[in-house]
Image (cartoon, rainbow, N blue to C red; front, side, top):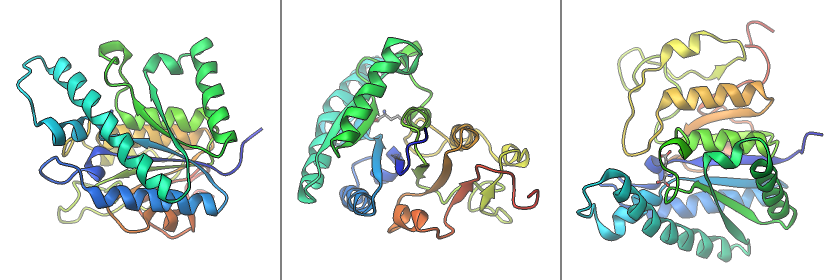
Length: 263
Ligand code: GLU
């Protein structure tokens, strides 16, 4: 049976950091305030938060480790702790208990791992706790790695049978061309069998996150196909999550049915 009122909100590194790569501290409060509001509205929110590597960089700088994989392990190990400290303190102000869930790709493979994850989410949500999910960057290397946290968010939304998935980035949504270029327009809705959407994206990635629009589009289409209404929107925009949930037309919405024209 579909579990109503579960919502997964994914915040990307580009939302949580400034141009110089250090953390954009006020944004954390904006995220937490909105999740607290969602709880008041009767939703069970799950936060998928990137930013561990960015937070680590804020603390120890780029560090002189030459091996890229080890550098990432060190930065994320340092950063994840400070990321959670920040979230923990902010949620505490709203009398909300949050928790850390670190996952590797293996945890979403069918079998015992998958069931363990379901049990974990069910246990946490049953207690009214807000799970904060991130990839376990310290141990997830090569084949254990998710494509990016967009993939992790999509898998989490499917696992908890969420009603909605909101993917927050530093751009307003899916555009018909490169955002900001002449003639490039925001795509407001993508229907289930909308093939045109795929032609709009380039694999160009911006900023510091691992994901790009191509991967967001893939995740959003897959989630919508599983009946999860999905949005890609700008996380730097005030009240973006609440406005989306309240039905305002913001960002790109992935319909769980056909396009408006095909209805
Ligand atoms: N897990 C990474 C972090 O917390 C982010 C991965 C991604 O950018 O998708 O820094």
